[in-house]
Image (tube, rainbow, N blue to C red; front, side, top):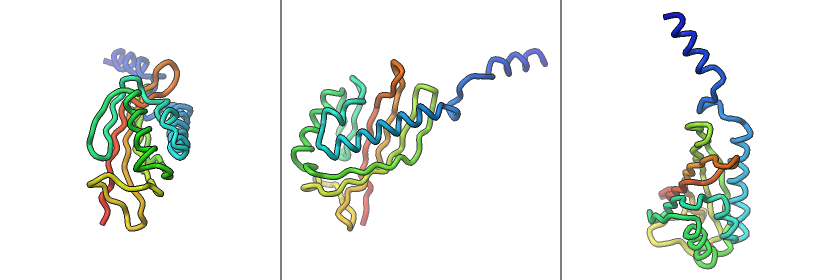
Length: 158
């Protein structure tokens, strides 16, 4: 029994656990989120979609889902040229949880101001700010992080 316990300890020793992912990985994910903010604020759909996986999934604040970087970029080009033209985005990373060393979930609080109008059914705060909760599933491939899933919901405010 003691030999089995020692073997188990030696197998587990040194492995990266979900809660001990590297600080460099967390910093890189935060850097990607910051780049998303900068791209949105320039109205640059191509840059906004840059870290989106080729076959990633995207659920917008209306609940519509689409797949792939090309569609993600196209949809953002549409909104940057219409309802969100000239808008300002802020993002605050609330938590990054590593499920594995190569898979992380980023929970993000977002606020958008200065938009032209909001889509039907989406409510703004009394300060005329759209507040959403964004959850991005990030995967590490080829030594860098990519957005595999982007799920955004508006926060209902009175």
